Amino acid sequence: MNIELSQKQIGQRITELRKMKGLSQEDLAKSVKISRPSLAQIELGNRGLNVFELQRLSLVLGFSLDDFMSKSFSVSQDVEGKTEAKSKKTDERISVPTLQVKKFKNVLLYILERCAGKPNVGEMVLYKLLYFSDFNYYELYEEHLTGAKYRKLPYGPVPQKLDIIINQMMEKGIIQRIKTEYYDKMQTRYIPLAKADLTELKASEKEVIDRVIEQMSDWSAAMISNYSHGDKPWKATDSNEEINYELAFYRRPPYSVRVYQEDEEDSI
Image (cartoon, rainbow, N blue to C red):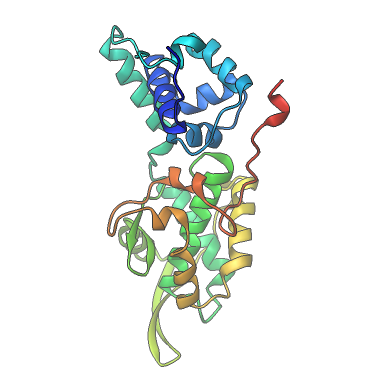
């Protein structure tokens, strides 16, 4: 007997079927001709499906529409454990960042080259410029820029292992740490002593960084911190926990840097 399923129930069933088939969100989204963020929203129950999308999903995932919409529907448990393990591994290859130290150093150097001369750009502003560069790039291209992990702290997102990287760069004479007074407060700043190797940055990466710099590098520490507190990845993360890059797909204006289309032109 067919029943009226909620969006959340439909999303859960699609998620289970996808994992049973050993497909990543990216693989399934391409097969049914929708964007990966749209599929993520469907699986979370935040977005509905039209009949054409449901038909394409049934073909790829191998289910009957009548069975899928029935109360008694259940995902087969006869799948070998290795398939589920493979699925989990495939899903994580995009969402789990791996720090690219060389790339991170060059992004840091490039930002400092552009911004170190501005009196407002101390540690607080620098952290946020790095964060928005990383998360904006991930939202746009579904790939990691530096692979840095960020933690939610009271004053906004902070890159992990930054102290280690900065100490390495200072030891090699690549940057210098200085203390300056800014509006009656002591401020930690960094001065680049070498140029970034721009061959390490793709044109798309440099473009995203440049946009962040143009938008935010003149903001005060308080202003950019308050702005970061409104960003969905920071808001949806518990205090002192690592911020999940996947949360960038749930941003709304003015934070979102990607135009999300529901691919209606493919619904034929």
